[in-house]
Structures are given as C-alpha cells and as structure tokens.
Length: 251
Ligand code: 13P
Image: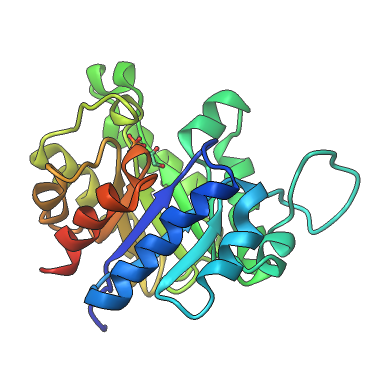
C-alpha cells in the first residue's frame, strides 16, 4: 500500500464573498512557490464554488462543497446535488459535518446517502464524525465515533473516494483541542474500523479537525494516523492557513 498523501482542507463554512477569492489565489500562489507535500483543498460556500474552481484551475488547490443532497436532481428547494458541485468544478464535498448534524438534524443514515451521492457524482466525500463534550465526559467517545463511522460510510467507500474527518464537536471553533493522546486514541479506533470493513482500509486518509491553528498544527499533525487537517477559522486567510499546510507538508 502506497503511503497516504497528507490532505489539508479548509472549510470556510458560511463565510466568504467574491472578494474572498483573493485568499484562495494567495494560497495557490504560495503552493506554486513552495510545492507542499500535502494535497490541498478549500470548501467555500456554495455561491463561490464555481468562481473559486475557475480561479484555481491548474493550481495545486482543489475545491469542494460543504454539503450535498442525496438525489441527483428534483424538487428540493435550496438544496444542491453532488452532480452540480462536480459540474461547478468541485473535487470534494464535506458530508455529515457536526454543524449539519446539529443544525439540520442529519443522521448517519442521511450522511451515508450523501456520501454515496458524492461517489455517484465522482466527488471525494469528506465524511465527518465526532463526539460532543457530554459524550466525551460520559466516556462514550469511541462508542459514538464507531457508530458514526459504521453508519455514515457507504459500502462503496474506498481510500480513493472517501476521507474521514474526526472533529470533536467541543473543539470546533472553541480554541480547545484534545490532547495528542486523545486524538491518537480516536484515530486508531477509526483505523481499526476501516481495516475491519474495507479491503483498502489502510489507505483511507483520516483528518483531524477542531481549532487547528498555526501554533498547534505541528503537534496535532505528528500524531499517528493523523493524515491531515480539516480547518475552519484558520483557513479563511492564506497567511493563517499556510503554516498549517507546512506543518504537514514538511514532515
Ligand atoms: P475550526 O477550525 O474553526 O475550529 O473549525 C473546524 C471545523 O469545523 C472544520 O470543519
């Protein structure tokens, strides 16, 4: 099995106007100058996917959506199909982010259908899992994450079409991060689950997400089975995102 190529993805969430595309091109400029080892992606809001994909065409930075509908087309006002993201130039789509699970009541079953839709459209699904603080305090982290992994990954998932992102809900946007031992424990469990179910389970990339910043990225990215990062706030500015890219890219 070839070594897993690190992957660093920025999730802009509900942030970004047309003027923000300059940050994306600034990131691409840095990547052109310094050729990081890591694969790079940015997931802007849906309104910017096509424009960002056009602006980054031919660069080392791929573009992704933040969510998709399970169906390819139909009467679903306000929703976006995976095929539409692909058509707009996307390579990735995030599915099952905890903000979607919480704000829109998405179950793992829904997330699995969305990930399958991503595969149908030829996109890489970045499937998110993670426990709440109450679940961690109750000692249920591994049970919750395992159930989310089993429920959210479709049978057709492969190392090529699927990336897992472990994002503890209590670490997102809070400035709090798990200890490296806590991250290692969960990533090892996810790896075990992937190996048990998929022939190429060793090849899936498992990202860590939740308050990854320039000053903690190196420590987090050095944890075994951490194959990259899913970055929120610190991905909005190329100057903040670039040191995180380097933290993995230089290893
Ligand atoms: P922050 O990096 O802002 O904590 O967000 C993490 C996240 O949710 C990425 O999907």
